[in-house]
Length: 145
Image (tube, rainbow, N blue to C red; front, top):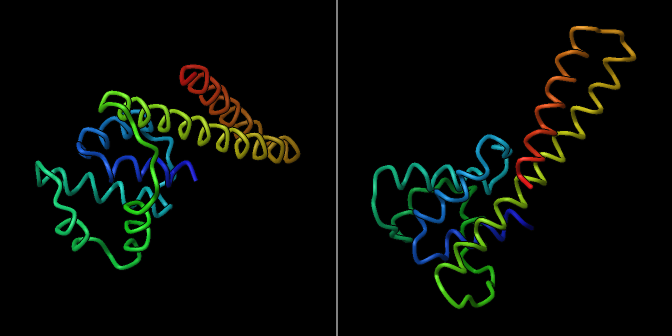
C-alpha cells in the first residue's frame, strides 16, 4: 500500500520528474526491482532521461501491457489535498523514507533467517558474510531514522 501511495504521489505530481528523483535518491538500492511499482518507476526514469516534461499519454503508450493496470491505478489513487508544493514534496520524502525502512526491515528478516540456517550448517564463511551484511543493514536503518 505504501508503494502504491508513493507511486501515486509521483505520478500525480505537478513536477513528476523532481518527485521521482527525490524518491529514487531516498530509496536507492533498497527497493525490490521485481514489483510492478518499481518497474513503473524504472520506466519513468528511462522516460525522463529522454524527455524533460511529462506527457501522460505518451508515457503510458511506452509501457508494457503488464504495467498498464499499475499505471492506471496510480493515476486514480485518491490523494489528500496539500496546501503547497513544498508540503507535497515533503510527503513524497516521508513516504519514500518509510518505504526504505520497510525494505530494510524485510531484508534484515531474510538475512537473520539465513544466518540461523548457516549457523546450523556450521558454514563459518557464510556466517561471517551474513553478519557483515546484517551489521550494514542495521547501520542503514539507523541512518534512515
